[in-house]
Every structure is written in C-alpha cells, then in structure tokens.
Image 1 (cartoon, rainbow, N blue to C red):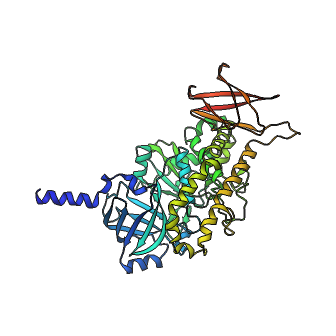
Image 2: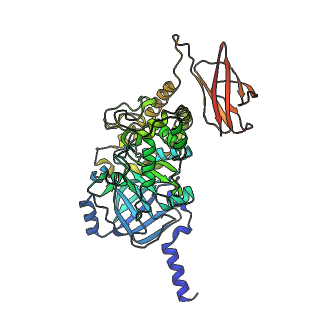
Image 3: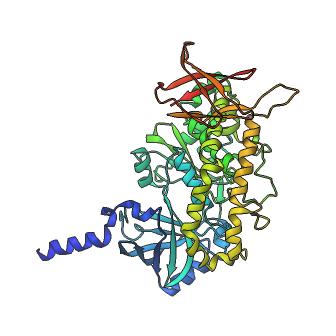
Length: 503
C-alpha cells in the first residue's frame, strides 16, 4: 500500500469509527467505559467556572467488549442546570468542537448525566425506555462508567444529543427549526413581535433563551414559533381544532403528556413549563413535540406534592397558563384521544407486571458500577442500602417513593380516575379494554369476575367479531382492519359499550 493511502486508511480508523455498529455506543446489555484524559489545569478551570459552556480539549477513549477507540482533541465541559452545582457533575462531550464535522460512531456529541439526585440511578433511562417503547421519537440511552485522568468518577447515563444527526435519524431530514424550550417556556402569547420571545431567558448568565433555536441559528427566524403561539391564544372552538391539527402533531403532544402523567414527570411542559423540544418539520410550520431531561420522575419530589395520586385529569399546573395542554383538552375529540393514550400507557407500558422485570434487569445491570460510585454519595449521602431501597421504598424527603411502589400507586390511581369504581349511587361498573388504541390484541379489565360476551361492531353497524372472554385474557384482533369500532360487552345482567381504535 502506498504511503499516502496507508496514512488515509489509518486516519479513517482513528477518526471515523462511525463504520462500527452505532449500537455499541448505546449498548443495552453492558456497562461500557468512557475515559477522559485532560490537562489538570483545564479540569480545574471546568470545575471552578461551573456555569461556563467553554469546551476544553481532551482525549476520549471508549472501552467496550470488542475493543477500544481513541479520539484526540475532543471537546469536554460541564452540562446541565442545577446539577452544575452538585458534587457529582454532568458532562458533555463534543467530537466536532475542534475538528469540524467529525463524528464518533455517527454522533457529534454525547451527554453524560450523573443522576446525583436519584438513589437508584435508573430513572432517566427507564423513562426513555418507556418513551421509546410507546413509539415516540426515539432517543438512545445507555449506562457507562466514566473515568477522568484514570480516576473513577462514577456511573453515568449516556444520552444521545438532540441535534441535526438525531433529526436525520428520526425524521429523515434536518432543515427545520429545532427549539429547545426550558423554563419559563409556557407558550403563552405576548404579542406578534418575535423579539419578545427571544428575550425570555432561562439563564441570563449563560445567555440561554427559554425558546432557544438550535438549528438555522444565523437566520434566527422565530416566525413559525410565534404562529403556533398565536394560534394557541385563540378560543378552543371547531376552527381551532381544525387549524391546530395543521400546526402540531396533536397525537404526539397528548401521548407525551400521558407518558409524563404515568411516570410522574412533573419537570415538563405541563407542570413546570420546562424541558421539551419543538421541531418544525422541514420548515413547513408543522411541529413535533419531544420531552427531555427526565430524571425527576417515578416519585422524585421537590415541592411536597403527592405525585403518585395527583389527578390525571388536571396534572398540569392550573395556577398558570399552559395553553398547549389546556386548549387541546377543551376539544372533546382531543380529550378522548388523551384518555385513550393514557389508558394505553398505564395498562401496557407502566403496568407493574410488565415494567417490573425490566426494572430488575436495569438494577442488575448497573449494580456493581453503582456501588463502586463514591461520587453518588456526596450530594445526599446515599449509601449502599439507599441504592437497593430506592427500588422498593422511600429513601428521603425528595425520594418519598421507591420506583416500584410509585408505579403501583400511580397505576391504581390513574385506573380509578379514568374508570371510576362501581358505586351503588351511580350504578357504574369499572370495565375497560386495553391497550386502546390497539394493534393485534386487546385485553379486558373488570372488577367483577366471570365470562364476558363481547361483540365488536364496525362503523356501519356490522358485528365483525363475537367471542366469550375472561378478564385478563388476550383477544386476538389481528384479522380486523384498522379503524374505529364499538365494543359491546355483556357481563351477567350488565351491558356496556366502549369505543376502541385499531391501528
């Protein structure tokens, strides 16, 4: 091989590991290791000026089962908001900061979150596993050990960056406006002037806007966002219902809201006007909604609020305006869509019998790395017992629930709020079908045991399927076409009808 060709080949091996399987970087079955080698003076500067977003040069080494890759002149800095003041910091790695366009395993940046306020250290990862399984715009996550200059800094959640590469992977295009929306991004209308919204800041010290345009920055054109906010200021009538469907993915917004409710994610748009992205697909004026920063979930609390039993019908902060949620829920068809989404989430994805085995898998996966992590003990004094207790019982005031008890209580609460129990005064019997919407099978829930006679009726009034079933048993509906049906059920002397959607 000629010297020039050999040099090019070696450079490709060193700087373009994108040819390797990207799943290696987000390994679901192992806890791989990231090593950062950085000059001590640079590291000290990072730790002293905690609100700086300045990148310092570092050597990045990714150590995994089948090998180890080295990237020189990677960018390294702190990331996060309140976590910058914690003892266990969170970090951001940029592979293209000092080498324009460079990627490692297909990504330009990585986010390493320390999970310093979570005794179990799995909450953010668990949320995204549910989010991805529910068919939302997927974000890849994994667990990694992080070492800085040879010293073990602890177990971290490795999260994919929301950037143009992510947009390409998810939407197959990336030329639209991507807004990172953080507190106090309420989507409340303050007039038609773009500058008004640009001047709302999340952090004056770092210059971070509450509505922060992360793509097409040079154009700095917020007209699409202002158009959406303007529409949300209108009365929620028939005209609004028609127009909002052309402005934003309504089903996606409502499903994201349902996931927040099911997982207890209050650090979101609905309660705290925080932590979401809006993406204007192809600059068409049609937005997608994406949740991020999801560590305050599954029972974590800072306000003394009982999140496990909070009413799912008014999860949002009703002391302030939240037009994206409240206006949508004022439209009857959207409110019904939301209820179906929430019903499906809690009965399919956060249902204790379904999610507990996965929680056990995550616990077993990270156990050794978590127990060896002394940095996780510095902020709240978490012990070895606290790590284990965090899955099954309260640990401290801001972690008043173990993850499993929280999910059990949340499931029972939402089920009761969506489908009130039988009551002699109102003659109502709790009976429902999940998941709904469904694809190939449905299952029945009933407070009363015994066989049910079911009839599925299409939109023309034709009975397309009839069967006997027991509560909890799967019913195969794979032979039915997608669409809206009515399910009529008969249990002893009680008869009811429920709408179901097959997709």
